[in-house]
Image (cartoon, rainbow, N blue to C red; front, side, top):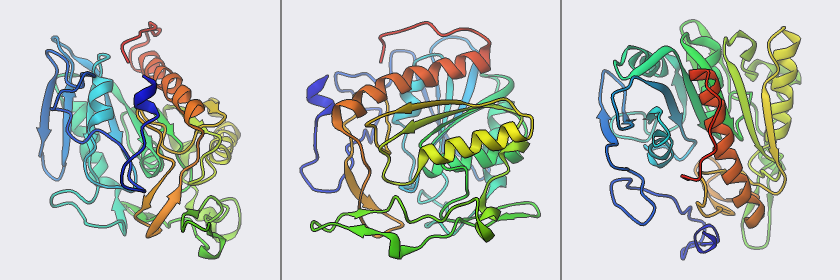
Length: 321
């Protein structure tokens, strides 16, 4: 798979991802019997992927980051392993908000309830999977909403980032930033790893999501060369806070040489691309071979985590990547 994971975009600062899971390259996204169901229930804008067979299946909600839209490729691939996976848009798609100013957790609560009530979704709880901004949204969901059993985060933050978060009478402000801490190289690419304030200090403590309220198990997937933000720091501080409140220690899996966008196996590493909030291209970190190896292992870790906590079954090693 080397020719794939080593690909680089022709146009600079673009990410190479799979836009349409219904078109069939050699790597099958929609396998025989897989069902792709567009969801427009109430305010929900999403796509549900159901595996072949009768079900019900363990359910997962999949969230991406600040790019917006409705990426489906990870949800589609994960459903191949026997999960009912809802790829959920939360801004920049159809009639959803066009930008990231504030999010209302009630929208995400609708999606959780949709999954819990679906006849093809096995209860009593569901899983959450989020990368980047999707990661801290998953932590917020797990902290405030009922029905969450397992939450997996890929280079996520334990502080609310980028937009105000509201739920009922609770408001969590976004973590403060200092643009003076951006470093720009000669090519005009920004390194933003130091931009965010410390959520353990001063008023920024208000942005730390109260994950100790969650009644689920956590998995933190960490790229140790993540240049978007300090993912390992967030994972360690999240673990400290959970244990300080008598909760179980989360699983933390760290990958040296892996950058921010840890995708499913063999997706090309994105070294740098445009960041919508920063307004310029940023470096994401990662060394191609180490990043590729991290993607393979992380994919197995995520499946094993959800199998264990959503079905109670140990994982079976598979080469069906």
